[in-house]
Image (cartoon, rainbow, N blue to C red; front, side, top):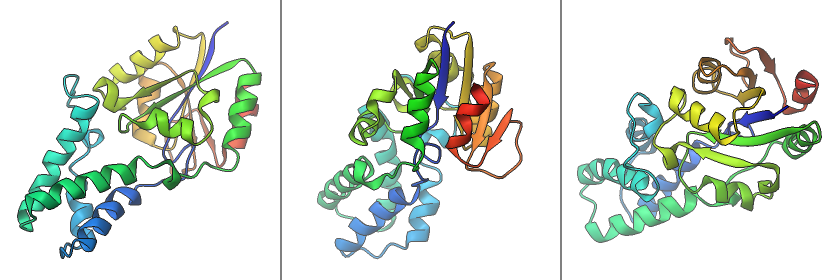
Length: 227
C-alpha cells in the first residue's frame, strides 16, 4: 500500500518568513540611498507573486522566467522612484540572493523528528509549495533533503495552490498513493486545495477555523493522527 504526505513549506515546516521579501528589497534600496517606504514595498509586492492570482497559469514562464515576471512587476516600483538602470541590476541581484539564502529560514523544532517518524511509518514525504524555483535546494541546504522523495514547486510547473493541476501533478509524482494527506498552514491553498484533490487534510500552526480533517498546534501531533 502506497502512503504519502504532502507538506507545505513556509509556515508549515519552517516559521513563516514573508518579511524576507520586503525586508530584502527595503535594505538594498536604503543602502543605495533611495527613499522608499517599507509599507509601499509591501503593498507593491502584494500584487507581484503568482500565488496571489492562482487562477492564472504560467506553464511557459517557469524557472528563471518566473523571476523575470516578478522583476518586471518590480520595475513599476523602480519607475515611480526614478531608480537608475545600473542600480536595478544590483537591487534585483541582492533581492534574489537574499530570498534564496537558506540561512534566512528556520525549521520548526519538531520538523525533523516528525518527518523521520512518518518515514518509519511507511509514508513517503513530498513538498508541495507555492514558491520560487530554487526551493528544493534550500530544503537540502537546511539538512532535510533526505526526508523527501520529491518537490512540487509552483514556479517550476506553472500552477499555484489551490489549483487542481498542482495537486494532480503531486499525486502523479507520488504514483497515486492509496493513502495521502495534505499538511499546511493555509486554509485555502493547502486545505481547500487538498480536499478538492481528494486528500485528507491537516491544518497546522493556524487556529482559524477551516474545513481541514484535523487541526494541529504542532507537527508533533501528526504521527498519531496518521497512524
